[in-house]
Image 1 (tube, helix red, strand yellow):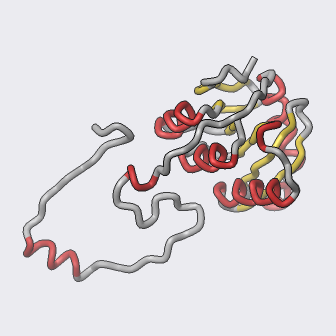
Image 2: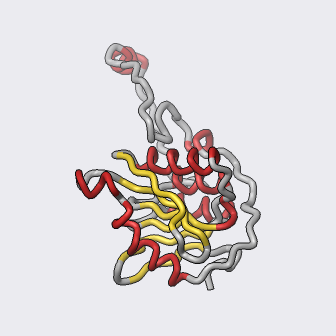
Length: 189
């Protein structure tokens, strides 16, 4: 075990390495793949500054917003195959929704829209209709979104990153409830 995951080290003979090297392929990185081309976990996770936000949020607002989100997923209604990312004001008004077949792309589109329209990330929270990996937490924390709620599971690494960056993390946000996994600055009341 390592601080942020597991490290596996193995030795192979030079003879075996030569045979393996014959099958080496060069692959282009794909969008949404936070670990493509990275061979060490500590190189994949860039340090983050603590999120600065005085946001206080009623968890009921998060829960109700997630219930409303499916109605605003215009393209997903047609295809049933798209993820969404939304930014929601403290009062529960869904300010913007972006959809994409890739969960990372949906969040990237949302953050880009917020930047173009000068929407202050400290004044609300993000919803995602997917699982929550460390990359999703990293993107939100880097941009300054203080709360992230996912419809599905989170990972242990995402939870650690949320705690370290001061991001409040909610997962399994569904019609029957939600689980608050990290709330380091007591934003959810």
